[in-house]
Length: 162
Image (cartoon, rainbow, N blue to C red):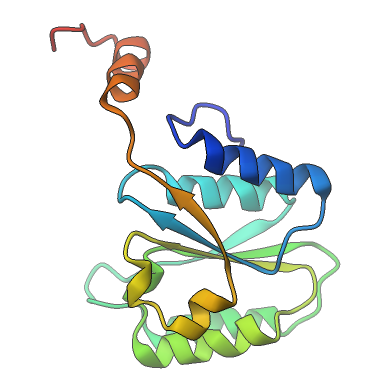
């Protein structure tokens, strides 16, 4: 997956491209901003561009939060050494239970080699301050109406009136 086809958020995408060009990513990023603007897609694209197959943590459909068992399972997988780069994407990271956040914090404090942790949230203030402080934040803003309309016309064949 690449960064092609993203609508808006040019500064965030440019920053991610710059990180990739320098070849020295930080160990953790928080993709924060407006809901529905492509933060998760950008995180997955960034992980892929790093050469990593992302491990995705998402809230189960039948639960209100991301469970500690999910976080522990991924952490256990990261304990095995790997010559390949790895990435963990936590979608809606603000939905982690407090126990899950505390378990994840340990990994943020001592990240495994060649591993990048990517947290995605439209409500980053719900994350523990200690988690936010250990991540570099990449801000995603709302998409301008004009860009959404242009995309709809070009990609979906929607008329300007519609």
